[in-house]
Length: 323
Picture 1 (cartoon, helix red, strand yellow):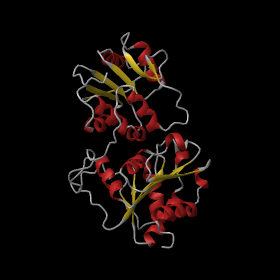
Picture 2 (picture 1 turned 90 degrees about the horizontal axis):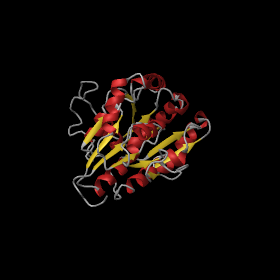
Picture 3 (picture 1 turned 180 degrees about the horizontal axis):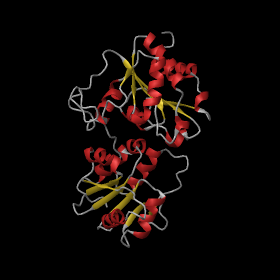
Picture 4 (picture 1 turned 90 degrees about the vertical axis):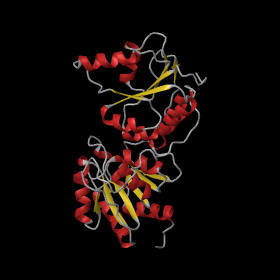
């Protein structure tokens, strides 16, 4: 690999989740930079197929619903995709599922970069290594050339245009504002900082003349409503932005505070000052955003992170200690 040939066909496997995909943007860009003429496909879950299709680095998106053995048709369809004449498969998911793909579906002799047993290019032990760096190492083995991805491809051309989520025009808040990401995956409630703590920090921002915008999905409505009950001055954008509008908000905010969840990685990647709150479910070195503008606070029990501790860190990051 690395000749710039046009007959090379590369397959990237990255099913999710959103934070992992955002951490993989530099790897995607680096793979394309080192293989400018190759056909590069990505296999992902249906929830992220649209996002992947909008990226400038892939020629093809293969949707994998990761059906069980009872979904015979979908399993056969994925087998057909995996048995195409791939020059190389770059497994950035490195799961038990993708190990089974390597064992049962890939043509003999196909180059495979990943952690599947007996694959041609096994990755080293990445215990404690950041997810972004792990994926960068993998694509370097596929001739990736170091590149830093930007988010221009994800930004909407017209932030005020109707979006596909709310079918209404999106109006950004006027003046200076901060964004709170108070939700997380519904099955990981231990990653949620208490709503009352978010409200306490939000009150300080409002007293200083900032707008506070609450974002999230339908699964986060309960937490967002709890914050609004204590902080009615906040702007509720929960469920009212598509991913492009959310990215615009995060990129234009003066500060972003949130749990360890996908959008927080967008904020960090956008260059906004970002503070991530982490509990026992997160390993900071391996899972945190790597950008210099992003910092984190970690406690074994996330609720033990006090609003005062968060405000002190925010003041240090923003230079507002005496404000």
